[in-house]
Length: 292
Length: 321
Image 1 (cartoon, helix red, strand yellow):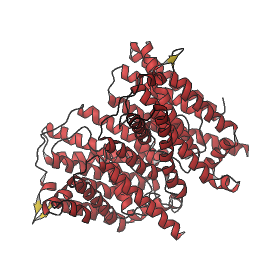
Image 2 (tube, chains in turn purple, red):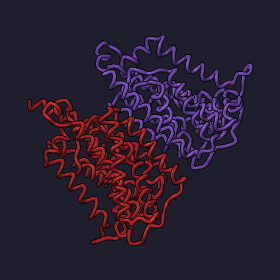
Image 3 (tube, chains in turn orange, blue):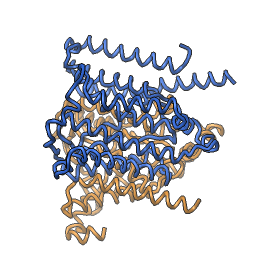
Image 4 (cartoon, helix red, strand yellow):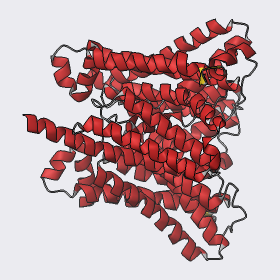
């Protein structure tokens, strides 16, 4: 942060910080679900595809003249349904989550192309953009959206029996099964929850940008995984932190923003995120070695 | 016919036959010579990457290398860049192979020394290597390779491209022999089946896997060299999507994602299935979308089918005991 602040006097202005926040909303919302799925011992590389398909359906629904009150639930339901499909596939067929979601990623992208036909959907209404761009009593609205999503996710994970089940499945699936936890149902529910959040992210995305591009959501799965791992989640399952994931999101978005303001080509973004992820993985491994 | 692995091979060959028939039905142009030549030029590239993925998966861990495509892009650019800077092309290719090995060694250190799960480690390096390929070139391709270099992938003997004769076939054959007829091969299968048992019987599991990740990096740069010779330019996104394709091919060919089961021959037939399907759909003017969708269904379907094979294999072993 200090480094970027010294590179550009614009970095620490209020306007820039609000911009960073607005750009982080979609990723932050998705990361809440990704954290839960990773705690469960799963992973979902298809969230970008879910986001994309939901966004296209939202765009098409707007074009069909449906009002916000119908469009937003349709988008969110689409996300939840696609997430549940992932969960069902993983729970029923024992296909490892990484492979299953790689496969569904292809399938979702295929749907995206079919619906969108290679062109942008643009000029969508801005009636919902207050959710991201507006502010309440001087506080950007995005803060409330992120706050609400994380409050729900936190309550589910830490204050409900369901969260205990997720942690149990992620820590030791066999043991969880033996003590009578409905492992398959928990998996389906966790993936569906992530899908639902991807649907919400799609609503926010459309609200913010008012268009749907062909390459929507291409990097978001990897960014979400990186943020979650940066935030202290263990990729082997059982351990993870919602607050940590949120910090991870901020870290990634601040880095991206800082690079742009420092005049570094945006092409370096991927290198930096990948490099950060590598550093975290190495630190984590070295720490474990020291402990062992 | 009762051997599950033989059944798998019969299954794969039938799928291939079905895909060929489907392609002929979809497009009358499929049987023309140009399709075949395109297929044969494409096969060695996916084939080499698929073989790299197969070997990494076989050794278990669970092992996967998601960085193959990114290594391919980066080494391709390095070779073209070094040549543009005045290095003789053959030396540049050797340097590319070394770079591939070095990138593979970074993966190997992360996975085998630091014990980072292979999925996470290679996801991170895929990002980093792929990002470097784009960032260092500003996204633009490097061209200017000499015409004689095209002989490798565009020249042919008896209608079959040289790189299939000279690179793909020898590599596939050598690895097939290593896997099925040498102690190293037996050690690879042993590590994949039960790493503790393998370790206790004296197999240096970590060192073995280390070498396989380095090999995977090398093979990815071999794929880069063949692509360079085919297209005469190095594109920063040359390997994009190849990681998924190589995993699809390995799994479809019968390699188990958690190791211990798989054959080079299966992977080779799977490469034929995938390339035939792609060429067939392309010729039938079926949109990119359906091609991607078909690949997704193929990937998931093949894992489910593979699981069933493994179950039967387990059942048979239990029956023997």
